[in-house]
Length: 125
Image (cartoon, rainbow, N blue to C red):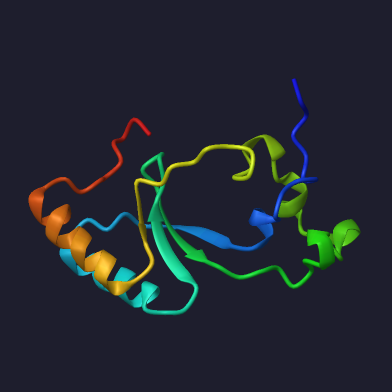
């Protein structure tokens, strides 16, 4: 089995920040999502585990040439704990939905939310 490393990666984990957000349960909750995606380089996505995230597409200040960390010895704990086995470069992740603009949110509301197909995680997750 080949060990997974950062050698061939394009530093995907160093080029975005994703923060879990509350599941939008009523139509009013989508107003915040509309506002989020109205900003440059900001997305909202629902992952395959039915969790909702706010994503900022922005590079780390310490990402250097060749995608090398310029602060490696002093990097934050979250970077030290990052598991290469779960890296987006080495795995096939398929988001349920990704919203990059206002129109996509409005389409979701019309075609999914209003038809009762909205994704709310069960208590089993």
